[in-house]
Structure formats: C-alpha cells, structure tokens
Image (cartoon, rainbow over all chains, first blue to last red; front, side, top):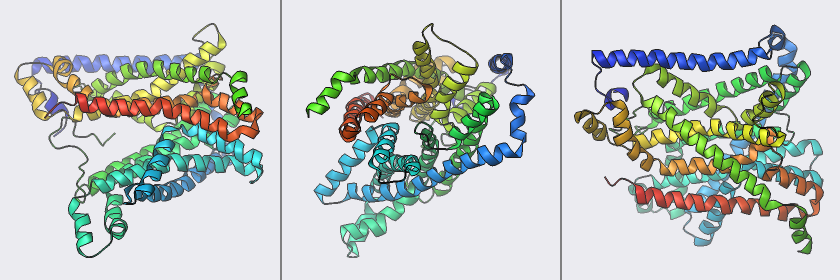
Length: 288
Length: 225
C-alpha cells in the first residue's frame, strides 16, 4: 500500500478537483522555476550551440572527461577497498572484549568522524609534499585516498559495530556453546552476518566516497571536476562543462543508490532489520 | 611551544572558525525551511509536487558538494555575474550559503521523512477519522511527531553541514578555516602537525557537543509509544 493512501482519504469528487488544481499549479510553478533558470542561462548565451558542441567531439571525451572520470574512479576505488579494511579492523576493535583496544579504537573512530575530510586532505597533501617521502605528483592522490579512508573507514567501523549489535543474542551464545572463544565467535559467526545486514548502508557509504573524491579538486588532484574545469576554461563553456560533470556523478551515484535499495529489499528476509518499519506512513522510505 | 603560540598572533584562527559557524548557521536555517517544504511535497497527495520533491532530492543528494560550490563561484559568480552583495567577499560568502543550503535541504527532507516513518499509521488514520484534511493533519498531527522523531537524523545533518562548511573553499570563501589552515601550513611547514591538530580539535569541540545534545534531545523528546 502506498503512503499516499494512508495520509488522506480516498479522494471524492471535490478532493479530486482540488488535487487536479493543485497539480496544475504545481506543474506551473515547477515549469516557471525551470523556465526562469533556463532564460537566465540563455541570457548569458549558455545554450548557444558553440557552448555544447565540444561535447560532440571525441577529443573532449578522450582528453578531458574520460581521463578525469578514470582518476575519480581510481581514487574512489582504492578508497573503497582501504575504507572497508580500515572499518573491519576498527569495527572489530570497538567490539573487542579487551578494554584498552576498545577504548583506543573508540577514540580514533570518534575523532576521525568529527574532523572534516577536507582538513585531513589538505593536511596530508601539504605534509607529504613537504616531507619529500613521495613523488610530488603522487601526493594529491595519496592525500585523497588516505583522507577518504580515515573518514569513511571510521563510518564503516560504526556500521560494523551496529551491525553486530543488531544480531540476535543467540548467535554469539551459539558460537560460545560450540566452544569458540569470543574473538573467534566475533570473526567467524557475528561479523560475516553483520556484513550482509549492513550491505545496503555500505553501498550508500560508497556513494559518499565517490562524491567526496571530488574534494580532490581543491588539492589539485586531476579528477573529473578538475578536468572539466580545465575544459570549461579552455573552451569558454564553464557552465555546460560543470553540468556534464554533475550529470556523470548523478548517474553513477543514482545507480549505486538504486542497487543499495534493491539489496536492502532482497536481503530483508535474511536480516532482522526491515527496510521500512511495518505499519509506518511512508512505506517507500528506501526508494529515494 | 613559543613558535606555536606565535602562530595565533599572526593568524586569527577563531575568526576563521567564526566564518564556518556563520556559514553553517544561515545554511542550516535555509536548508531546514526548504527541506521541510520538500518533505511536505513528498508526502502530499499532489503527484507533480511528489515528483518534484523526489527529483530535487535525487539530483542534489547525488551531486558532489564540491561541484555545487565550485559552480557557485565559477558559474554563478564569474560567468553569470550574479552578485548577492556590493562587496565581493560578502557576495561569495552568500553564494556559498545558498549552495550549502540547497545541498543539505535534500538531506533534511530525507531526515524529516524518516521522522514521518516513526509516526504510527493509526495517527494518520485517527486524524482522518476526526475529519482533518491533508494540511491540518500534517500540521497538527504528523509533523509535530515527525520532527520529534527526526531530531537524531537532523542532528546528523547539522553535524555534516558544519564539517562541510569547509568545502566553501571550493567557492572561494577565503576566510574560512580550511583555507586558513592551508595558508598557515604553507608558511610554517615546520609546524604542520600542531596546526592540523589545532583545527581538527576545533571541529571536534564544535561537533561532539552537538552530537551529544541531539542524542539527549531525541531521547528526551521521543514520543512514548
């Protein structure tokens, strides 16, 4: 049952008329906003053919967009792998029954979650650049990956922890009953189940990693935004270039988000967590 | 140690944090208003508004904030020559607020919708049963409970907003803290780590109380069911 049938009665003739009028007004307002934006852009000549023509040429894609996208995907891909590793180590650390390990992991995770990613990125970029321990041209990529790993790894550590806490108590008790130690039970029984339960949240975090890789723009990492800005400055079409870059991000992220939603529905029968609470008003909460 | 303390005489660190706080404050208010309206759109009976709300959320939530704020500077300010104040820096500051607000409005909308999710079905049915139509039911029954259920996610959005205000560097707001940290490290590369820790701790001090406060408030104000 959809949300809309719960919040209000099945519309009668009068309500249907009001809804129709509302729909017309809504469409008009949306169209007015879109028309206003388009006319403002057109006033500045942003819809002239020459502005968009570069995107029909293969060299634009070959020398600007694809290399940029490749660098974005490279930074995001490496960060995804390292974040998951970091998250598993610190997530298990926070669940450890040895108090010092739990305490250290807790402080590290809470600290890294509270510090803006951009600050970490700038710090590693300048620190690596001045230390001379890496080649100067590698410093931006390493800074992007390390900063994304520390932040998103901490978020994933929290996901692991809440995933394990969300498991039925019987899982650990069963592990203990067959003679596993607490650590063995954690590693072999609880964390693997928690990983499945947290898969949708994990994929949503991958979207965050991909979006935040664009922060590399600020520290001169040649990712998609950097390349499209160069393209825009070169061709004099900054606004169309940024629109194309945004569209590419939206398409990839939307695909990942849709995958996360599908998975949360598919996996809901295996896990205690349901995609939406039963009997709530908005049933399609995950379909955003 | 003296070296370190002399930094604070040369650079005004609190002023940079104050810029971030101001950015966050205004962006939070605008985002809360837009986000609430979007959430109302998404639960309203009017299909075009539902569609608009969903489209807005999907577009802004999936675009990197860096692109939005860079667009504010490269697109709106440089190409379109939109100016929100006579002074150049104030104008860039306001454009960055608009960018931050538009981006976080999508997350506010989803936070409020998750709050609506905590309201049991029976509340909406009861509201209908006593003859309330959509807007009165939303205003009197659903939203007050939804906001109380949405405090924790809204707090998370606020924390993200404060941290994301550093991205205003992409919109050429030069006075904010990540830009100042960059300048300070460039001039005093011997003090890289103390400078970073100063700024990092500044954000920890800003963010952790908000997290504790919203957790406390969400428990205190939770609707007992």
